[in-house]
Length: 187
Length: 125
Image 1 (cartoon, rainbow over the protein chains, first blue to last red):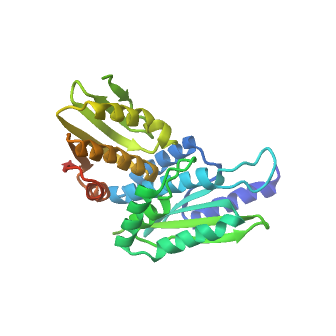
Image 2: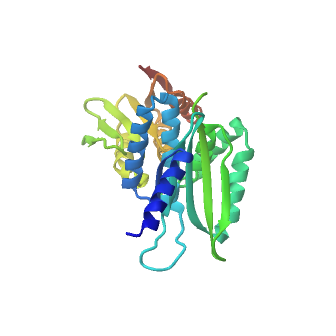
Image 3: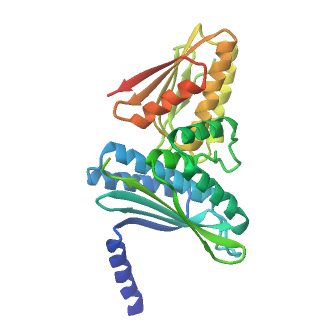
């Protein structure tokens, strides 16, 4: 093994420490992965004596974010080893908050719709969010992928924070969609 | 009617639907990979039950967590109860929630506003 790689590992480790990253994963998000991560995060929160209210919120956000990747991440290269449902998933924790970040490829033609949806959700107040959730539950249908179009609204309601997102163009067909959610530790 | 019993796992709840013993309940966590497939047996059991229900139906929700896809299924179940009431049957929901879990309590309250089904909120310590 080249020493350059080992140095990279150490730098990576330091970088994770500096950003207080507790968990990072890149790859396909399956139900097995989802279950493993929530178990890990729960164990970590127990260890940190996190309050049960914060634990529940982190759990909630993690599940919705992971299921978003598995349902909505688009493939961005052709070839046998690359597939949809892949992305990066990261959990970090500081004294003030837990932070759940996801990143995945998305076809450019879907970007506007997704952006508009997030912007709309960000603009709404608590009551409006509740109404939107109710309406979506009543009128929305479960997609073939099992999504109900409720995840973002729910994250926004549970954390009471605006959704932070970013789109990075990768190619003329695909962008990288990043979403970060902060869950305050002190309420 | 046949008893429907599904054991809980780390991502799906326990379901017990037993007409003879008057036990109708769902408990635990609900975040199955595919909610439609998981809940299909329960939905069709309730559909059958609705044709010949007990004099009074008491359904117990004892969920500690459910994801957003499951929240839609819960509304479908409640809507089925609403229809039973419209047909003249007596149905009530007992919504059990962990005492300190405000979100789960609010979820129950919200559902109770959405459907015309009597709700009893039960705080569990």
